[in-house]
Image (cartoon, rainbow, N blue to C red; front, side, top):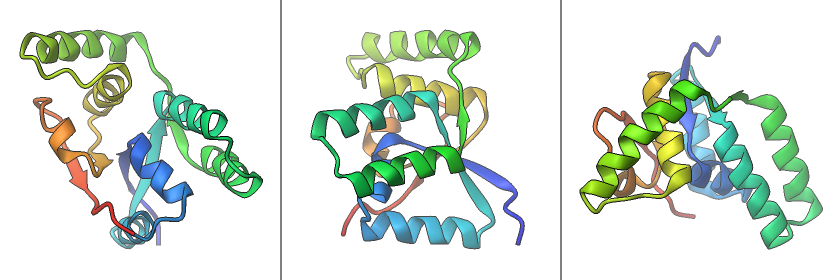
Length: 140
């Protein structure tokens, strides 16, 4: 089976996956079954490293982080993404619905790259017009 369609994983999803949470693992199996492969962003990688150092992850989880970063395509943050970020964040702030730098930057990459965003934070990300979302149930 060749995986042919990409989906952009947000930080919470990959964090749950690295923690071994059942829902995140089930979501990964479902994606593979649907011939979808997971990509991520340099923003998410930064947030994952922050979590590792802030929470002092054990060696097993730290090794899993290194392995998943090596295995995934990591989309770098570009000037084009930054421009989209500025447009989105200004709109969110104007409406009193800001979601912060990291999530807005991740959303800007998803929009520019025309990728659906895999997240459990549908209520959070649905504030952004034009962002395609794929939910996974965050439990277990």
